[in-house]
Length: 312
Image 1 (spheres, rainbow, N blue to C red):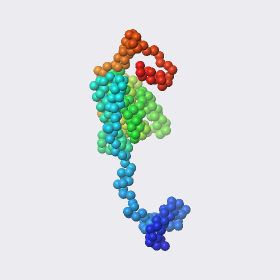
Image 2 (image 1 turned 180 degrees about the vertical axis):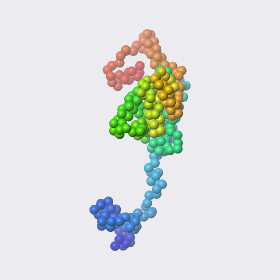
Image 3 (image 1 turned 120 degrees about the vertical axis):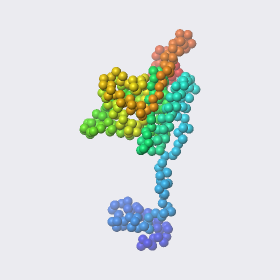
Image 4 (image 1 turned 60 degrees about the horizontal axis):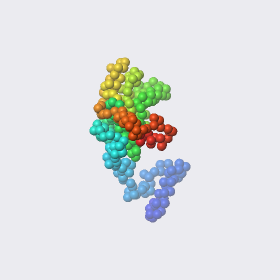
C-alpha cells in the first residue's frame, strides 16, 4: 500500500517520481483517481525541508545589481576622443556629456529594476533635447550615448533615426492600424505602444517640422509616446518654440512644444564653434602651404578608405 512506502526513504522517493510522471500523462491520471493531487496524497508531496522559499525564487529571477556609473559610459567615450585628438575640448560639450550620462544611468537603473521604463507612481525618465547652430557637435554627442547603450549588456532596445524618417514610419504605422482594426478612438496609442515594445529609447537627429499634417498630430502622438514610457533624446538646430515657426495653424502646434519641454531637458549649445568649418579651414591652409595636400576624392569605397577619411 502507499502508506507502507513511507517506511523507506528510497522507496518513498521512487513512488514520488512515479506519481509525478503519471500526472504528466492524461491517459494515466485515471490510475490515481479523477481528483488525484498532492492534496489527496500528502505523503507524496515534497518535504518542507526540500521546498524552495519564495524569497529565493524572487532573488533568482531579479537581475543582478550593476553599478552602471563604473562602466565608463558617455564621459569615458568622450575622453577617449579627446585623448586621440579627434575632438577639441569645450566646456559646453562637457556639460552636455554630463546630461547624456544622466539619461544613461536613469534608463539603465529603471530598466534593471523593472524590465521596463514605466514605473507606477514614479515620473518617467526625462529625455534630452539638444539644440544649437550647425557644426557644434550635437549629433556626435548624442551618438556617444546611443553607442554606449548599444554596448551595454541587458540595456533596453534603442532606435536611432533621422526625425523625418521617424515621422514617415509613424504615418505608415497609423495607416496600417486603421486598415487592420478599422476606425478606433485612439490609433496613436496603439502605435505608441508598438514603439514602447520595440524600442523604448528613441534617438532623433535633426528634429524639424515643416509639414502641416505632421504639425497637427505631433502633440497628441508624443503625449501617447511619453505616457507609454518611451524616452526621447533629440538634436535640432532650433529651440522647441522655434519649430514650425511660420507654419499654417501654428497655434494648434504650439502645445507640442510644452509637451516636449515637460518630458525632455533642454540643452542649449548655441555659441559652440562650427567645427566643420574650422576643420575645413585647417585643411585648406595645409593644402596652400604644401604641408599636407589631401586628395579631393577618396576611393574605392571600403574599410581602408574609411580610415583615410577619418585620419584626414
